[in-house]
Length: 105
Image (cartoon, rainbow, N blue to C red; front, top):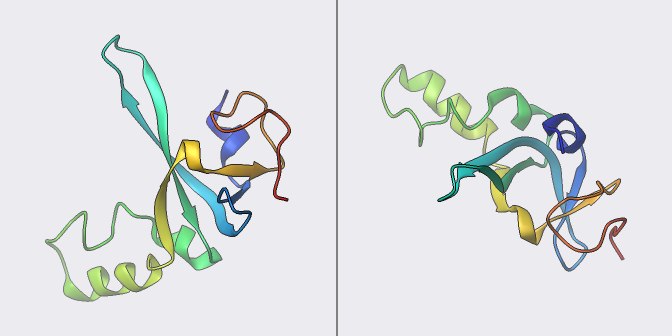
């Protein structure tokens, strides 16, 4: 699976509530050295995608206070969700959660 297949998809929680759009992926290395998709970063609003979480105040506490403040405000609706607790629409075959082809109820 490629990152481009996941980015921009609408993400839903297991109860069918909309979380937002996938804007970034979090991968971690396993004990065998292979990378594994662990979390998705989802944003509710279009402007949350502009700021990104990497320039937020929680990631880089130094720097101009105004930029940190604006980035923090823009990233309020952006959150990181475990990949196995997310359903995507349109579905992606091979995505780690649920049966292939599953969407919100």
